[in-house]
Length: 393
Image (cartoon, rainbow, N blue to C red; front, top):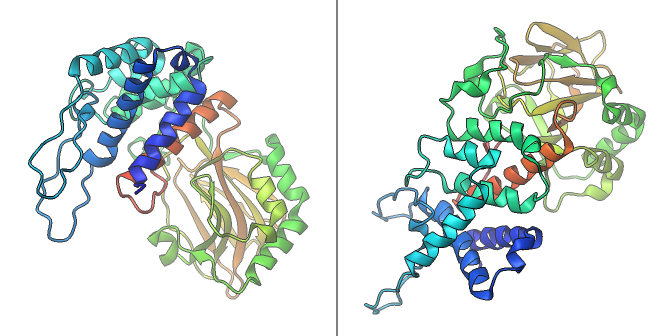
């Protein structure tokens, strides 16, 4: 009877056991209690912060449990049973929590979590309570300097009212700060468009344009309409996507054998928590002006099938560029942007890739962020979120 929550918990414990050398040096009893701590605290996030209401149920929504309160082992009583389970010894639980907290409290991630006004209360998100220990275990060789900008991101995540994280923010009328939902400080001066020549990935896409186009056409002949609207805005705007990767993951049962080169190229970059795939825009349609609100990501689009006479364009901030077949556009979606295909009868197709900003972030920062996003997605799925969208954080 594997539940999504249990699968998540096993995943987290495996991640810790395989990376934390200190774990295997603990006495067996402490190893057991350490596992219990992670299981219980994670279960608290999955089952406590969002109660999925069943039909006819009148159960009240409970508060998010703290790590300590989540430690009680209370399985459902069998039918007719009046005996309640006994909680674990709280003194041992508290001691283990203190040991974990002490080990990470003074590193940048621990201090960032502690900066939350909810720190130490039952309202604190257990996901972030676990992060200092999880990151420390998964990346034991990371130095404080390596974690500084990641800690800034965590500080913003646990307290969006804390504007001090934006100390390096440059005001721009087309880059609204209040639309930012995930922010890493210190990534340098932003700009609407970047030079695609700075990324070898963009050059590789252009070099393989003919093959990518052939693979796209092979997918079209697969006799299954795999195009979908990622958001209602896209659907209303005539923009539909053949998704190859979602939140950085492969799509189950997708015919990747029909597009091996495209797949290999996409997997050569750290895909971010949105989509990678083929976007089609119908004639005489466009996506309205909007911003995506995550400064850790960049978007690359290569023109695959483009109407003539510069009929299809994208505007980012106040700068307009037109797609060309076999050429890439590289841009920052924290700026307001919009698209339009003015052709009366020809659709526009691009290969669309969202990925972590390799121009500004270090490989370690990207690996840590991928780890955080993957865990966050599993937590959300365990809570009952059927489709996890872009704003995981």
